[in-house]
Length: 102
Image (cartoon, rainbow, N blue to C red; front, side):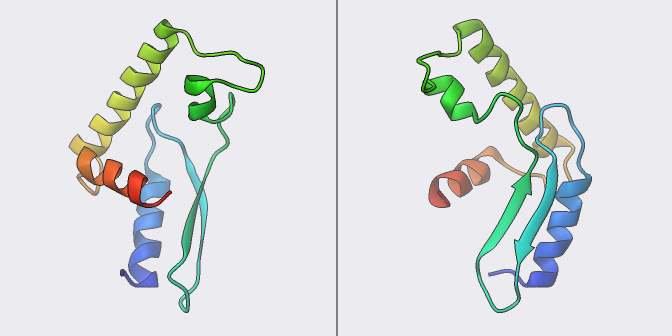
């Protein structure tokens, strides 16, 4: 487990990243005496991506053209993080984090 100081350093670095295909990190919550930490990102205008991809309560789905645009945008964001980002993030680490931390 990383220290609170290391966490804050990484949060500040993430908050400084700017790319059109990344959500903006706007805050965090962490305490020294707890292992629980939370990142707060900007609100997405159209709601959560999973609702658009897999269906909303009104039954609407994202069409395939829009899905392709989302996939390309996600790929551009990952390429930025991997090639130019300060952490040199690999996609496998991101997917592993996403799966294990839900």
